[in-house]
Image 1 (spheres, rainbow, N blue to C red):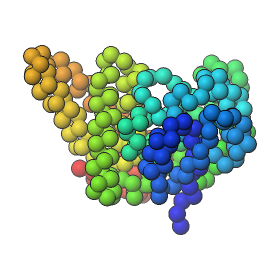
Image 2: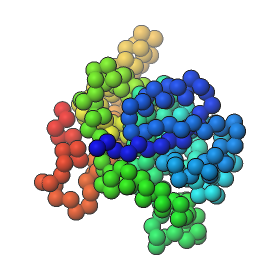
Image 3: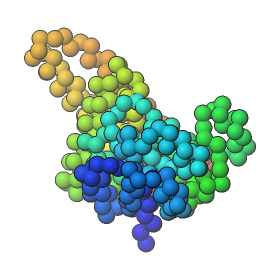
Length: 292
């Protein structure tokens, strides 16, 4: 029996971007429901709050005051923001950012957005007072937020709060063309990471998270991650030589690869449910030992 679809509220103004998002989600477990950001999106989201599980946002589609209004209404949803990786937070700290030239990763970004929301977006019942929430920078709990969390857990499976992945969308199980497109998209993400790594840490962190999220949910082999890094560094090195510049400093970008590996290790560590016997773990959460 197929998993229930997640209904994603799409607040995208550009019709071409909307069509592209719909194409990359077609046939998956996510279904888009368009909400016109130029009308009264807050009223629409409020009216259909029981229907929506997450939100897809075009960067700049809503006024910053609208995001505060959504929070006030208890309409804080898992979010993917489509737009330039700038380091800026649009809606909340658990949102996931994806540039429009990397939409091949959209379904994995939505998985990551739901997972991040469930892991970071809720405070515990013993720590839900407004004062403690304000001090920690988290949004206070409301019955609606607990209801949404329980609905997401029910639709994805409790173990799927952060740990469950869909093997049919693993890189090795994709059709050849789709696999090739996903790798090319990940290369663009990694390039964004390298270009901003030392000059714009906030933007680099968003690019890093985007890469790691897709690498985790697509079961990207570690060897492929290293290959992507080496190919990009090699390309930078050749370009610098052609332009007559030194390229010794490129060695420093090994820090970026180590950063990616550390984040991936942390995601795999969290992918093991507490108290789960290692021998009984399904293959999908057993790490990358079999992926090379």
